[in-house]
Image 1 (tube, rainbow, N blue to C red):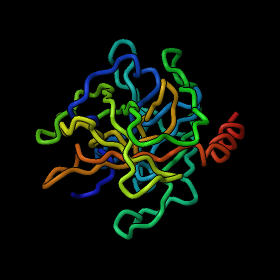
Image 2: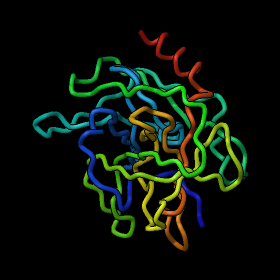
Image 3: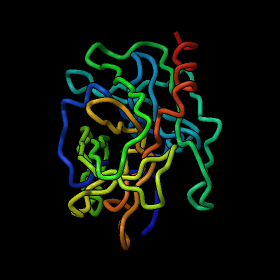
Length: 228
């Protein structure tokens, strides 16, 4: 089982009803992530999506299908983000906040952040993002996809990360392009995707991991307030 920065939903389905809550992040190396909308000018993504690229853009398509690429005004990486955390098995808060100079179009909406303190094993949550729908063929449709996954606690209950697995062991979960995408419980945002893992040579479909937002709400709210 090989952990890797989470890449789109494999074995999920297109979810146009969630497209209003997320956009893409594209860097100068051709890599893609997702970003969750917290306000018309503030986005939340995974820190590893933006911390190491020299140039990147926020991306969506307008109503005519024309690609829109926007350079962010400001980016803040969480102070506890550690890029070597996976390899060294250390704690890391893999989050970054993005400030846009102009508001998103009216068809995009902020997703409500839940103050839920945690979920017990066995609960179902929805994971969404852009990117690969088939890992083997590196296939992406450029559309948001989602899947319902089971909360698990393989190393005990965590206060800052959320572990998820396919309840039916069918290999569904996060994959390339999903990092920064929303994890929803009862239609409210509780976490964002940070990485995925697979079995054998696969990087997807075994575990999906998210960063729990409740402990980071002060950091998030300060950024939003200062961005107004």
